[in-house]
Length: 465
Image (cartoon, rainbow, N blue to C red):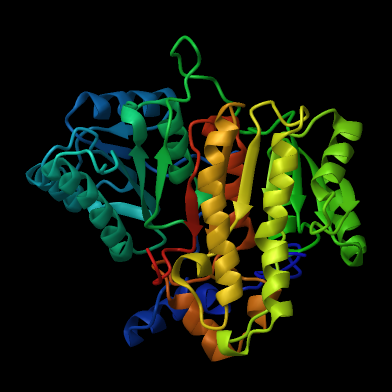
C-alpha cells in the first residue's frame, strides 16, 4: 500500500528529467535561451557535510528581531550581512517583519529586498519571518501581516535559477529568534527544502528549554536514538522516507503489505532496520506496530503515515468499492492507528506523527473525488490531533507532495508529463527524497515547536495556494 507517487530506490524507480539536464549546460542552455524555452535549474539538495548556504546571508529589518536573528546565524558560523554590498552574490536573504502594524510599513523593507534580488546566487533562498493575521487583530495589522503572504508567494514565482522564497509565521507572540522559528529557518535555508517554494511554516511555541535557553541540536544526526515506523515503505516515496530517517540516525521499522514483502525486506536490510508485513486496514494494525516496536526497541517515537492508494473514476461512475477502499487505506486506517498510539505508554517520549497528504486534497483533481476527500481528510485530522499530542510534548504535521518523479509519473504520456513538470515555479518535478527531507525535519527534536502544519512539497505548483 505505497503512495500513489510510487517509485523505487535511486537508480531504479526515480525518474530522470533529461530536459532539465540538457538545458542546464552548454549547447542546451544556449538553445533554450534563444528559443525562449523553460530553463529549470539543477537544484541544490541536501548532502551531509555540505554548507548550510552557499554565500553570504543578508538579514533585512530594523527591529530587535532582525538583530536577534542575525546573531543566531552568526552562532551557526554563517557569513552575515546587515546591509547589501552592490553586486555581491548572496546565498540567502532573510527579511524579518515581526513588528509590522500597518501596510505602509511594508514599503521600505520589501523595496530593500527587491533591490537585492538580482544579486541572489543560483539556488539561493529568500525567507520571511512575520506574524500571522488573526481575527482579533486590528484591520490595519491584519492587512499588513497578510500582505507578507502575497509578497512571498509572488516573489517565489519571479525567482529563477533554482532560488526559492518561503516564510515563517510566529504564532502565539513568540520572538523571531525562538528555537522553533530558527529550526524552520535552518530547514528553509538548507538543501533539504529544495523543492519547497512559496510556502509557510508556523512556529507555535518557542521550542526553548525550561530555562529559556536555546537547545543544542545535532544537525548532522537529528534523529539519533529515535525509533520510527514508516508505512507503505517497500518502494518509492516510502522507501525514500525510510532511508532518510535512517541516514539522520533513526532506527526504522518499515511496514507494507505481504505482497510487497521482498522489496520491504530489501529496504529493511539496506537501512539496518526491521520489516513488518501488515495490512494497515485491519483493526489491530496499530497494536501490531506497537507490539513490534516495544519488543524490538522498547518504545516508538516517530510515526510516518505514508501508505496510500488511488482508485480513480469520475464521480458519476464511482462505485462503492473504489470509494470505500481509498477511504479505508488513506484516512480511516490512520485514525484508527493514531488512537492506538495515543493510548499507548510506548508512545510518550516527545512523539511525532507525520502524514503524507497531497496537493489533490488542496486543489482537487479530475477523477479523484475519493482520493482528494481522503487527503483533505488527512489535513483535517492533523490539525485536530495536534492538541492531543501536545500534552505528551509531541507534534503532528503533514506534507502534501505535488508532481514527484517516480515509476507512476513515468507512465504518464510524454506530452502530459512534460506539461505537468513545468507547471510550478521551479519548472521541474520533485524527487522522492524531497518529500522525505520535509518529513525528517518534522520528525526532528528541533521542530518541537512546529505542529499542525500542512507543508506542500510541490515547487509552488500552479494549483491551490
